[in-house]
Image (cartoon, rainbow, N blue to C red; front, side, top):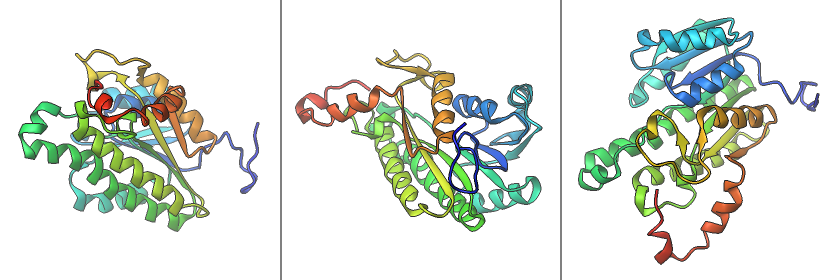
Length: 259
């Protein structure tokens, strides 16, 4: 067992407190929740929170001490602070917050309809910035807590084939990276997860890209990195050198890359 220097806490343990999953229907978010569930209170936050019976049952079966649900609309920026305050007041301090909400959107539609392009960027970037800022202030005041943020390799170098979604992930990646530095020394840990193509509901009907992963594989890597207090993790790991190399491709070649 690895022992950390801060408070003698094991580097394999996550911070004490509730596990809050923002995006309680997310396949990856639920996989993360089941891995962190044993002995903990897990709060699933989502729209239509009264319809999360299957999700609650899965997390309870994984060993959670209790599973609660709360109403959460990511696009309702004004409600973020109230929701987080209510969660802490009702269920206790946050040990781990998992940002698992987002939309893929339709690239072709977004190129033709400005409102749809803005919707993608609002949910995948603006709403994430809002909730991250509230969470950072809350956890900084407490002096502990961990935040898991899901970026994407799509944001590492934005491709023509999915530039609306990719640009939102690029913004989120940059924001989370800066937030990590801003919280250094405060006791708050931010993990930035950069998965490649994930086979699941969001990508149903799409041809899997090379080096694809499943939700359980992403969750395994993310939780291991959370326990190790890493700042970033690529899933699968081989995508890191691959995409560093792709940054060197000439634009004439890059614009022809598939999503």
